[in-house]
Amino acid sequence: MFLPTGEKQFEFWKLRRGGLPNINIAHSFNISRQAVSRALISMDKRIENTLLEMAQANQIEMESMSSERGILFGHLVPLNVSTLIFVSEKYGVQVWYEHEGDCGKCSRYRECIELL
Image (cartoon, rainbow, N blue to C red; front, top):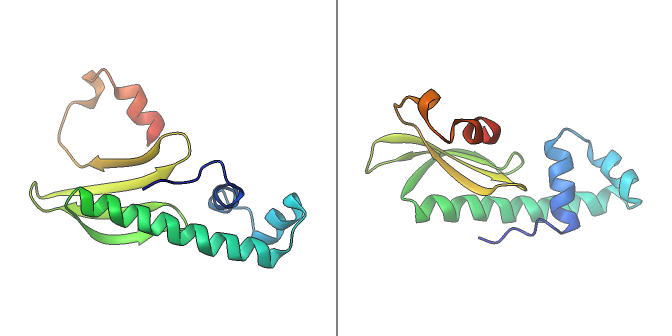
């Protein structure tokens, strides 16, 4: 489940996720739009595979996924809870589970808010 965060393909993917059109990415790197499109298709597949592998490893049934956004929504059957898996350059691949709790009293509250 390794994601090449240091590669240009990942950089293109982050820029597109941030809303930059392919043509603008191409101009920024002085390459063709087609080269950006090919790189993004490849990275989307890698992101998709990573999300699916993480879901499988955590017994999560996929409900929907966007490789362009790096997010998978699913359901953890053993605990009957909704789940979210996402890709971030800073935090890697994260798995979040729906839960009832008093988040305001948790020592990791700020960290969770920053992630979400």
